[in-house]
Amino acid sequence: MKGDLDQLDWSKGAGFSLNWRRNDKDALMWAWRNPDPKSEYLDLTVYYHLDYERFWGFQGEDVLLKAKPFQSIRIEFIRKGSKKWQVNFFNLDESLRSSAEVELKSNPTFSRRINPWFGGANNAPGPFGGVAPNDMIILMEVEKE
Image (cartoon, rainbow, N blue to C red; front, side, top):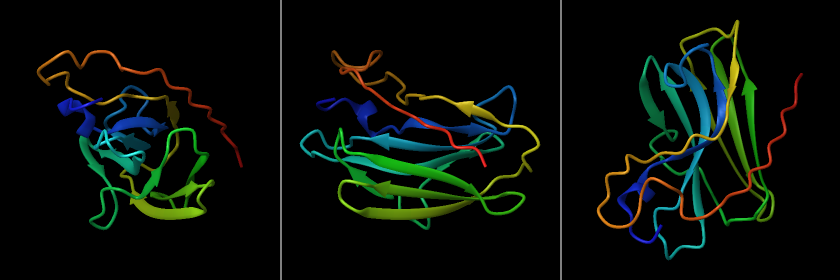
């Protein structure tokens, strides 16, 4: 994004919401950003909402995994209890792995998928903002128990 302030915002890759109307109440997602245009790596993290408050990262770490564009990554959401979820990140091309555990307030009697949801307040000066500067291809597969 070459210097746009919005490049520091987290863009959500995908996830699920336990609220049938809102993405920002009780939701769990993975997110990515490219905070340094000179870096060849993207930052990845866990991103979640609890009663409209947003959180990202795990145990004081904002970034849980790094990957280059076009590298294969795998992200797993595994239910560990009535409200606990484990999120596993894998960079398959570099054999890197990271995990986080998140507790949501709702016990999932209902959930729905959240598709990519891009961050940014479009508040940076200059020609940036509003529309992504590059096209993306995201392939997702959902495995059910």
